[in-house]
Length: 441
Image 1 (tube, helix red, strand yellow):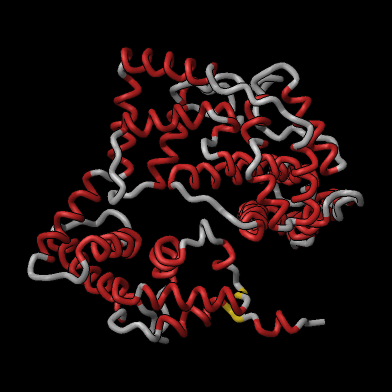
Image 2 (cartoon, rainbow, N blue to C red):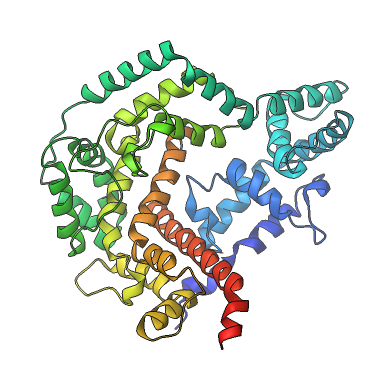
């Protein structure tokens, strides 16, 4: 039965389109129907105006009345800058052609750059062509590929490598000793079973995330985390891909020295490469500073310097064992939210197809059954890997989800993106193997 609240909810796309049509001078950023282009939403509205990464409630497909009102208010409040962004985009396109720049999609590159120019200078004036050309030269001269080359050269210097390795070990071994207090488990359990905002605020204000993360480096820490997982989820903790042994090893400096793909033992180089993908030319930073920032972040619990992000990760850890889509419905006794997350994946058509393949003799694909089934069986591990990457991105950008609803949306979104990734792999495997399957049918 549809509730009154649901009746009042509106499609987000309709809310955006209605507000967008009230903004003058944004035609070059608009679709034929007058609403924003898909890339305008992806590159400008969501990350720069609404900031949906930190406010996921504004990114839901269906918006409650208060969220719809907030989206409209934020867009209209930024109308002048959005109009200036459209004007700057025209200059950037013209200068891009003049400079014969072909790298990257023009909208992907120029939409956020136009917004940055509008923020810095307002509407373009007579100097706009020169400023647009300079901005493009800076952007393409300091792009991620060039920065990665700088990073590789920096980490190839034997003297720098020795100093950085010593500094990493110093920070790793001088982190504060936060014992894993038993009080943290009831806090985790309360949030997992209700997601009430007051429960989340109590958990977010605790040192739970860093405490569990730092404990993994000491004897008994992995067992303490496993007990927390069992007490909250009611399930034994599977291999979640956090570390190779009983204790987290100090991550290597260079990616070539990684012994495996475990989350907490990823190299500094790989982490900084991820940071570079999230930074734009509008956020200049020296390679040395980025590496130093990552040394500090790596030394913190779960490799996340912001305490609330580490706490969000440990919440994902205690919920993750319930994500077993190949088993169908999650067993009783686990948090209702975790059951819903598992059901979200278990009812996917490709998961049902995989379960039928396991129950009978019909092959799932021509050759890749074992790999795909292994990935489905390790769904919890893949969910945590994607969650950690998302939280690391928040740490790099300084964004922090605030309310319990934001955390719930974040976890739901990560489960969905993990599922979509696996669905795409199944589809590709089926298409690749179709001729062979038809030949034997």
